[in-house]
Image 1 (spheres, protein in one colour):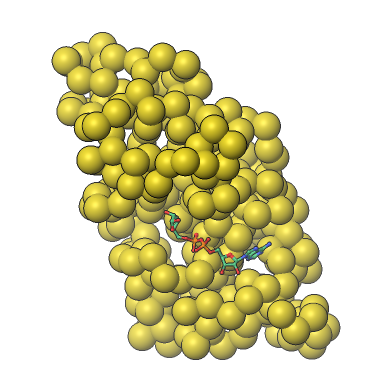
Image 2 (cartoon, helix red, strand yellow; image 1 turned 180 degrees about the vertical axis):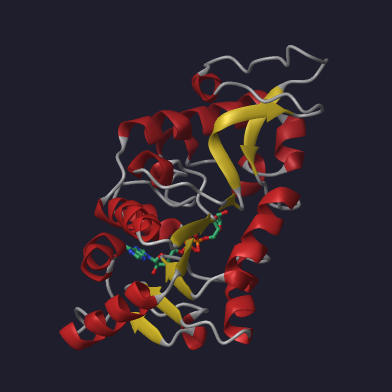
Length: 249
Ligand code: APR
């Protein structure tokens, strides 16, 4: 980390964002860090410290022990209920309202499975890795109420013989087609891409910003550390999301 971005770099980012008719935000775990959401690995503590990601976040882990997997996601859902959107989420929601008033828009493509963008007042165009809240049937198209994610006993599907499972993308699973299509469409058509808090190493999601770079769309990155996507960015603001987003949007 090399300290806060200079006022002139902040002003340059603010200008790019103000002048863009359609700002697309591509967010990752760092977006929610200041809300207190642990990263996947940081969440493997306490009761869960003896488990491996492959026990808890793969189709094989689910088939071996669905109650264990349900319990892990139930804990994460309960934790999500205790935290709030941070100043960064709120700044992006405010930017969306400002753009709408002037005929523009902000679209959000997130790798996060939390609902903090939505709770701050943004509409999310694509949840690439699914959502912690809102379970779905493992077999059919049934989707449960978000509150059911907090059930202590794994719910059965009311429509078939299946069980409800978390609506998240596990290691080894395909990304949801609809979310992927929405993400590529919005990233390819935006006038500026704002990348926030992602290491840019988890594919295929991490390949999306290249679609913007190939089209000459200006990219601004907010991340206290360099990431795999930093080489694509016209401007890298080395700072925390909650600190810098209110200053540039
Ligand atoms: N503000 C902005 N960025 C931050 C902040 C912050 N306050 N704190 C940390 N970061 C940055 C880190 O420097 C890092 O580059 O956020 C990034 C987080 O990287 P990862 O933990 O790898 O998260 P992400 O890129 O979202 O991971 C992608 O991998 O774990 C799986 O499915 C999970 O969706 C996730 C995917």
